[in-house]
Amino acid sequence: MAELAYARDSKSRPARVVGSSPTTGINFMENKINELKARNLDLEKLINYQDGSVVSREILKLPTGTLTVFAFDAGQGLSEHTAPYDATVYILDGEAEVKISGQIHIVKKGELIIMPAGQPHSLKAQKRFKMLLIMIKS
Image (cartoon, rainbow, N blue to C red; front, side, top):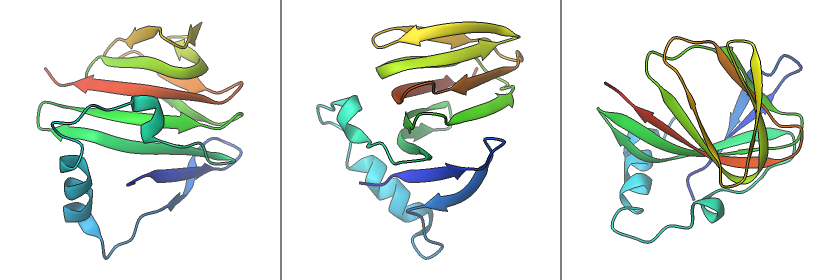
């Protein structure tokens, strides 16, 4: 399975990437994405938790957008940032603390939230959670 794990430092910044290699390159990742097409997928099972890490796996990458699954260990997160497009998060397991323009939302398994383009947002795992990130460029 092509998973990338991001170990986080105390400021929730990526410290290292686990599971990638400069020798594998983009072709390896494109092949892994192609293996998922025309198949029934259990999104929650496509990715595993790793202690002290945020793990991600792209399942579709097109010029018009991406689908990426993430697994966040407890205490991990993505620091505040903005995106040029709306970003939709669907929680596959657990619950996430999603902060959008200073307002905190608790999003639980089976729920989704749309983070509007241009608005600062961040994600935090009080407990482990998995999510699907849907980015559609417009």
